[in-house]
Length: 390
Image 1 (cartoon, rainbow, N blue to C red):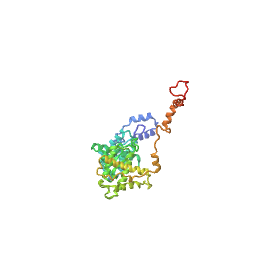
Image 2 (image 1 turned 30 degrees about the horizontal axis):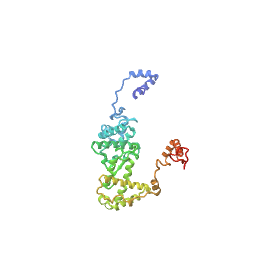
Image 3 (image 1 turned 90 degrees about the vertical axis):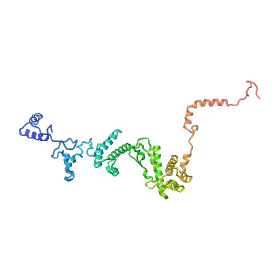
Image 4 (image 1 turned 180 degrees about the vertical axis):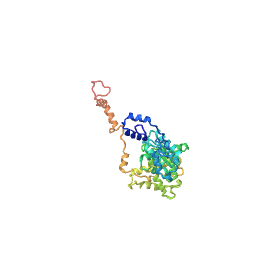
């Protein structure tokens, strides 16, 4: 206050009232020059905390109240408690001091990776994440249930920051150990660079592809190999996996569960096609014939890929396409799809009309000449002019 500590300012307030002095800056400066200063208070035991300690426990008022709130049995010694506390922070500051040494380095690495790609750093969300990571010695080695989406509350920014941190750490940890991320049965789509549904723009939201839902190991291996080799978009990967999941559930109800591809036959494929024909939405409404037709075609394309790749050499030929297994499209759609496109040389085509409009003056001139030349002649070839004709 006016360049004085609270104790000296209280003394000055008593002096100028008692002596009848004017409370001016000149009188204050002259009086302060005659007063001895106090020894500075020791700093707060919490590293990086700027306020001075105000109590015998050598804590600033903020940390002293927090220490007292823990109770005498839970707080322990003030030194050990202060070593794991964050300093007094402003709104634009964060501190990783409360974290374990390895966790602190992991969070710092994840923040550096986020800053490298130009993403915004949210101090408020990061402070909330630090609070959730207090009891974890490491993030990449933490139990899966301790870093789930539900562990970070309901705030969208906190969940997004935490999931991105874990993604960067897992990618770096796999790269350090020489692990190919596509060998895992659960793929992190943003980490693998698999784009959005259309593939035109990079993926902005988190997403995973869980191949464990496909129960048959041989079918799961074929789908994963197709995804590795074709580098599909997010939408194409989702539709192919959904089709294979329908087939997997249908095969699981067959004798043997469809685990051995060498014993599958015509009846098994008939059961798979029946599952596609009865495919329903989540709300119980049936899908359109076009959707079911496309889904079945996606499953057949996965089987063809597996045969071409040599992964389904033991799969019998009866477990494949057959005319009896088609899902017919509606009649109007078949008519529309079978209608031929107009030829570029057809008078009804846009290209033909455009070319005719450009060349019409010359064409009309040529047509007039051709009409004159095509008029019937009254004389035969080689007859002199003026000679009578037969």
